[in-house]
Length: 179
Image 1 (tube, helix red, strand yellow):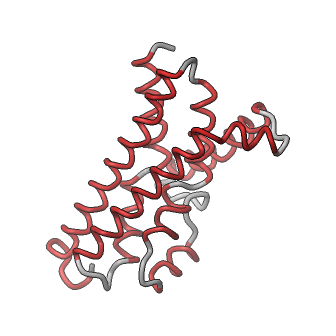
Image 2 (tube, rainbow, N blue to C red; image 1 turned 60 degrees about the vertical axis):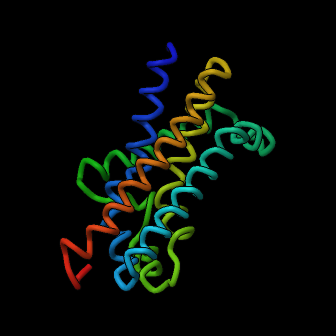
């Protein structure tokens, strides 16, 4: 796989797994009582934490699993099953329980600051995204592809921030007091 193909594959995979667009309804529900500035700050913190977590797992994930005695084929099988569950939920137009559960959304609505949990972990940087990052890193042929993967992680964080920040700013305008 050449560098361009790897970049498109990595970005597409991560965008579909992190799925910032599907996180918007839960984000708005959990930040219903917050001001626009608080929503934007929570989106920023959540996306920075997501970038950090995915970067750490991209750089150390294989070593961690090797130390735990988990082989790459076992990780591929388990990660494939997680991604299959996410894909099946996408086909049914549902947010995957792998990414967030109803209990997590309800708990988030009660919290003062939802940026780290449940927004960044597990909604955006959940098991599916972590598995995808580790598997994408295992497919990287050299350091240039690893650099592209890290760039894709940052790009996904930026896209997620823009999506959530725009939703947080627009919710008050479009939906009024119900948002």
